[in-house]
Image (cartoon, rainbow, N blue to C red; front, top):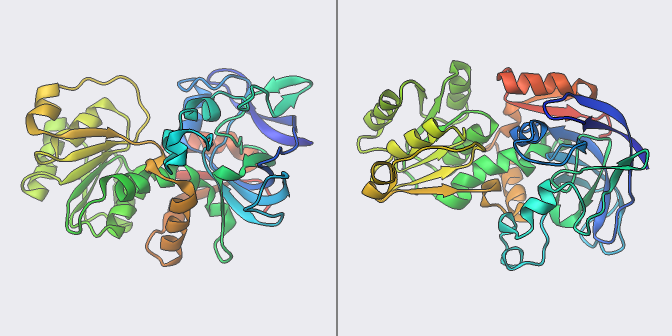
Length: 366
């Protein structure tokens, strides 16, 4: 079928909305009319080729919409269902079968390789293949999604807010609720108050943490963190000062910490602000960093843990987050600013500048 999609043709290039062809869904896939899609830092990493999704490509990986057609093998969904969709997985390797699809042996190939598992492309233009991303490519009017990566959205929940649950929101919340699992009363420091870090802050409140310390350079984001459940806000300064501020608030250091920045300096601060024997979760995409094995980790028996997609099984965790939202305990909609699909480059620029926390594109298809 022919549809409009936002194409990236070259490294650092703009999004170009053009006509493309989308193949029909196969056995375990669904054709979804996209209602909205979040703009995530991972999309930016692909645009600048820090993640080597082959170009040209249609990005977008925080989609949601309405099922229009299902393949012959789809059992969980029917046309008319409202769905949010997340990352792709093979469903066959031992990690997938163990209920941990974020550790799928084919995760990188399926989500960033640009092609189907059999090497073919479902997107094309004038007979030439166009890469997909995250097994969805939701910067488009329609997407073909495997039923393994889709979750039903219950009635009463605004469909257009649910797309970011598939990546950024579940990444931050899952880092706390699925991996750190703090005890009630524990203290936690969260570095970086974008959508991922603020989701970690809200999750820490759900977990009944005692002191929830938000750290960021921007005062506006610290104020948002305080609105969403942080008990303290620390403006990031020199590493020694920032770590000192957190230790002064907690006495012996935080019981755990989250680095949602991917910045090596912040990662080191996140490690150094915790008490001996404590875990730090790294969920921000970044590059090389320098750590002192003795002083930062081994000497105080600390651990630095990399977590992908909040260590989440979307089929289980996204409904949990939706339930928390419905109960007023996880107001992630307060992070969102909406943009029309044709404003995608403005949404990107506003996201990168920090003007908005979570940009969501609406396709006019809801």
